[in-house]
Image: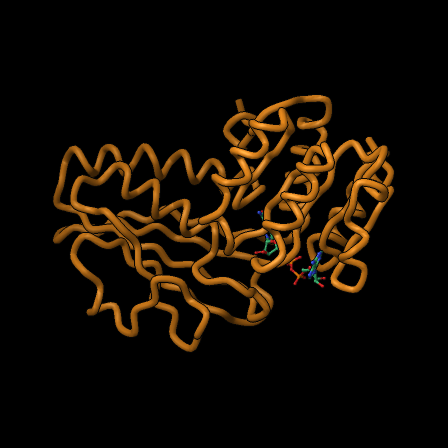
Length: 251
Ligand SMILES: NC(=O)c1ccc[n+]([C@@H]2O[C@H](COP(=O)([O-])OP(=O)(O)OC[C@H]3O[C@@H](n4cnc5c(N)ncnc54)[C@H](O)[C@@H]3O)[C@@H](O)[C@H]2O)c1
């Protein structure tokens, strides 16, 4: 497989190592200083692009890949309110695109467990839900894309919930931000975001009733598992057409 790496930061570098370990070649590396090289000429012959850049640049990068007919795997978070636009473009161009807010196998098992639990709790009633996420201090978006997915899936199962809000003390860039948990409307799932040290990612979903509390918790030990998931997704996407997620890969 001939790959392009778009975004040569922590994830891009880890992905480069795994591509090489699995016998793939890297034909193009794009970062902020050569972003204008992302064009049809440089993408010619590339089988798949792996896009892990920033919330401000992901949309344009993925769009360029689709317009140039290059299959693209992206895991960049913090911009996905525009994901549907790119999925429509992908369909129109008969391209190939794979997006996941989290490429870890364990997190995707957590998504499945959470969906099922929300459904059961929704039928039974009596429980409130909240989500806690902790990440390293360099993370540019809040809440994490993974926490948003967990919240959306909880909302789908719980009749009393219809939105999420973010309690993120000290973070100005938080989306749907509230300043204290007490401000949260009753129909909102509170996502609490903590930024500390070099933590790769911890997510906890808490279902709490008057008499007991149930928690689903996942902790990533290193970034390698995320990069490996993205490379496996790229191998899967190679030669395919359409829009894919981790559910397709796990199936
Ligand atoms: N889906 C997942 O499993 C997963 C896992 C880890 C990180 N992420 C997300 O991936 C993104 C990148 O994470 P990271 O830890 O590597 O961040 P990072 O800050 O280490 O790297 C981002 C890189 O993008 C570069 N960049 C800036 N503008 C660019 C442009 N126009 N084109 C290409 N590159 C550009 C930056 O210079 C930087 O090197 C973040 O949104 C993060 O939340 C997702």
